[in-house]
Amino acid sequence: MHPLLFEGARGTPAGHSRCCCGAVADGVTDKASQKFISSAIQGDIAEVDFGKLAQEKGQSDAVKQYGAMLVKDHGDHKTKAEQVASELGVTPPTGSGIGAKATYAKLTILSGASFDRSFAKSMVKDHQEDIKEYRQEATKADAAGRLAKETLPILQKHLQEAQSLEKQTAQKQSSR
Image (cartoon, rainbow, N blue to C red):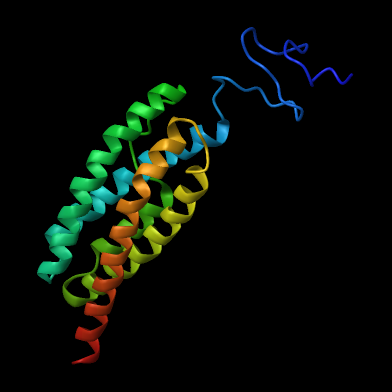
């Protein structure tokens, strides 16, 4: 019999079991889930920053309202994600990722309609990427997977609204 096919296989922590592929189950954190939750918190920090920037620099009321929604929803989500991080033994990051910082820097130099257009386009792209990552994580049964599953409808709403903003800002450009 293969040594990894039964509970108590050599090298398995007490109280845990290994499946036929050798993965440890029952309470040992998945490294991918740890990476996901860390990335999710960085994303929340970035979205709150983007939301505040949109409220400051947005020309249209729709962009400003979208920014306020980002601040509220991603601020709330960050709190939940930090709780999950604690459960998974992850120290929550305190800043956004490099890509978000670069996008933020590009947006800060824009103003008026060009800010609104670029902001909307960035939010569509960002939320499409987020949804893809959250869908993948939502298939897991751990705390990160449950949070991802719970968050997907909010991200989908953000994407739909960002797509609407993108259309509105494009129409304003073409009507000039």
